Image 1 (cartoon, helix red, strand yellow):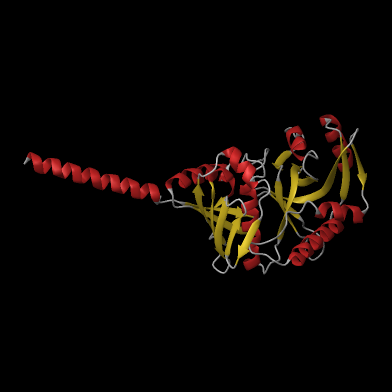
Image 2 (cartoon, rainbow, N blue to C red):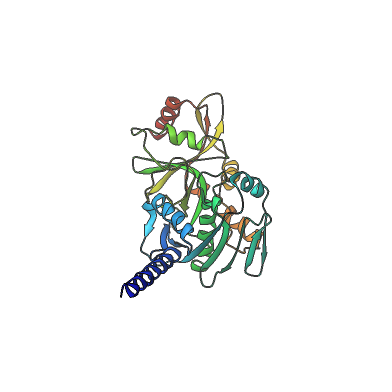
Amino acid sequence: MSGNNAGERVLTAMVSTQEQARKAVLPIKDVFCLQLGSVCCALKCRDAEDYKKLMKLKRRYHGFLTQQPADITIEMEGTDRLSPDDLSAAIADDKYFHEENLFRSTSQAVSGKYDLMRGYIKITGERGLANPDMEGNHLNQLLSLAYYSACKMKYDGHPPEMIVHACGILRSGQALLFTGPSEAGKTTIARFCRKQDGEVINDEMLLVSRPDKDGNGIKVENAPFLGRVSSGRNIKAPLRCIFLLKKGSETLIRNMDRAEAYLRLMRQIITPAYIGQKDKRAVLSLMSEFSDVLTKSVPVYELEFNLDEKALWWAVGELES
């Protein structure tokens, strides 16, 4: 009898272990959906280690979670072949190659397949690439690619909003957009923003809409792009004006020639290429058209900036008044 009981206990333990392993490999809630403007993107995984990473990301993205059906799904599979230092070196000069519906990087840190008709991307990559603090922020690049890929199917390749590399500040119900190349001062301006100055929307990337048929109604919308300073809220507000940043010995704002504003703004639009995109002219045409429409529709100024916090908000306040 005791032998039978022992056998039953072993069998029960084996079943319990198998059940735990099954749950670890295939979590019940191994997917969540993010709102990126008018597009919904699902992130999912199958491996237990990837599931832990996914749940950390879910907490970071909590302000953008949605129950809406996904327009595109990204399935992520992680590998741990490279150390952080080796990974940084490997991807420094990475290039991507496409063959039919397959892709891979020269470093082999990333590979995958896709089916745009089904709205599906499968990515196998080093888990270190999911680190939001890693230089280049590959998560933001992945979400940008997913957004434009979904727009290819949902809007026939004409996104209702474009992604702009900019810092957005919400003041008196309107958004001010500060944009320029890396190290121009976008994150510094976000950190200078106190409660009395406004609310930081995001200091990394933002969605900016096109105007309506009358040339009005341009909106700035936050999205789950991870920056150093962000409200973490899905804020949407009308665009008041755009500041193109320039480092200088003093802080001052000047009107800009529209042709100059058009060229400088176009450089800050995140390339609107969907996965597998091969028509570079179509990509440049989208960027050109959007920059042209935007600079026609809202005031664009050059903000020469010397990192003086008080001078910054005094100059902005003078312009608004």
